[in-house]
Length: 444
Ligand code: COI
Image (cartoon, rainbow, N blue to C red; front, side, top):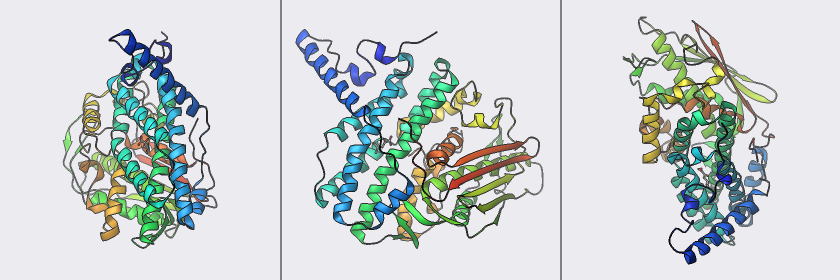
């Protein structure tokens, strides 16, 4: 069966549009129809523009020699670029079947995006440093307002999974999530540039950076940091049947290979990915060896290649085969056909909580927050487990870690591959480009 899309239904879309459908009197109706028509024309106008995709290297070069003119240029780039990127995603949402976009959590995301689009579109140009500070406050508020987007979208699309073929669902989610990362990167980079410009410093905790890009990021240091953070929180875990397994302390992680490999990257993204991969490896090891007296160590091998920096994480957690997953790459899928756990009631419940309380849903957002606190203390992410802090983990798991890690990895052209040795363990291969010359992987 083919569902009608929103643009095929009379007033269009979600409540954001229905608000303007004028049910009271003909005068109001004609006014609101005109408003609706005008707003859709604005959306078309922005959606017809191409996003100006950037590379990491461009972000670093532009931010390196900062002066007030460049900072104001950066503010105006963010002000004009974000509504274009949001408009593309609003069009994507409008193209969904009506039954999907009217789903409560999806409609909530639609409204947030519509409101952000209107705010950016109407924002006057920034002409001086005082206006830039006000613009930064405006950006911070929108970043906060959008904290529930990922759990809401994930919940809405999980519940709508029966109405969408797996390929359409996964490509829609990919476009939505990569675009969201890209918008947050642009906004957060500008905020960080403004902060460094104000303080005259480009060093946080002895690590050189330009905006949010760390120019000498050590893979080993980030692995150690995530391990330390995980090991400081030995919470009990649930196996796949829901049985609680007491944690006897997470396994050790041995790091070898090119220990001094350094590259320029967004630290928050790298640490999100490493944290999730290491957490999965530790959990699987713990469960697979619950009756043994000792836990086999996890091995992380770093390799600095000509064009990329890679890490292989090998565990003896028994591998990935399960009744619910056919192939390891299905773990990245949002479709219940590929990954039946998407419809698990405890996961849906946890997503519902995360989406309603508006927690910072990603570890990256949490680690990012602590890293800004670290400016004073340089402690390891405040010594807290980000997901636990966010109230969305460890029980029950919401299943976003791997798909989000995949999205973060591929945003600048990296790759993430899972190889399961069923009955023994899993090898995960992460490769991140180190030259910074790949354009953002956002689609129009
Ligand atoms: C998001 O977090 O979903 C955003 O789009 C943030 C951006 C508008 C600053």
